[in-house]
View 1 (cartoon, rainbow, N blue to C red):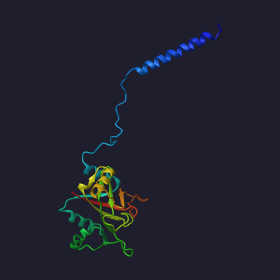
View 2: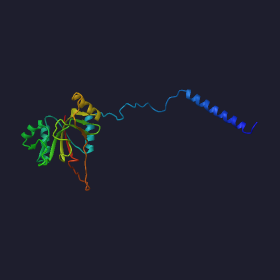
View 3: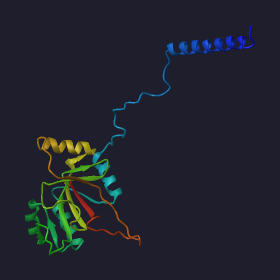
View 4: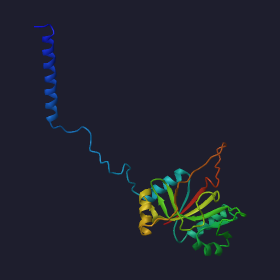
Length: 215
């Protein structure tokens, strides 16, 4: 018998034993040590309170926020405008015009290239709790974008329009308008730009958002 014959026999036997053990292991049922993962579930935990979640994320991003109701909304709006000493107001919501006039607040209703507005008043269709952001559409088509108008923007929105995420915001818009979205829609989160001296430095491209939520 050749010298390597015994070696080949032993090698073949070892391979067969290994294959037998693998086949046996594959036929045995065993429980996985890993928990079941639902790949379709939301990876984020849903907040207990949408309003509180939005307020926290909006303020953390750099926005200024005031909670109000229908009774004190006008008083607080007037207080913000007077307190910030805004001289020229761009009002994009015509329903507010009688209120501003009654309070002796001068305003314009369209962008005037010859007159720079100190503040713009705009309406947000939806508030997104998870990101602390605001959804704007062309419902009041006086602006191609909420940005690049002026460095201070007063946003008016309703608590009932706070949703959890962007998908819910868009779905609700489509439902409200029978599946036909606006031609223009943008979602903006507030920022807090700071200059080299550590001072807040707002501009039309990075405006300061003062949000009044009517509860």
